[in-house]
Image (cartoon, rainbow, N blue to C red):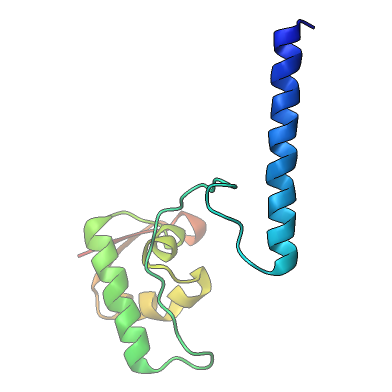
Length: 121
């Protein structure tokens, strides 16, 4: 290798060791690593619906149903997975609110099982 390439490789290795050493020290001390030391991929921020553990109240189910309906007005023909990601809840929590909306005839449902798509009426 040429001297220029060797110098670049050695500089890279030195810088990498420095960053790793700083992160290890920060981890051992229990502090967060500085933001500049480790770039992170930014995720789309979706508001999460936080709830207390235990049985959901009818009011909580109604709130989730309203959130689902609002999401479907903005994003028609969405799957349950897309709805869950869009409103920030787990997929398994959508069963009751979706059933409530179906019973109220507020949803248009197309397809079966995993291929089901929902739209607001």
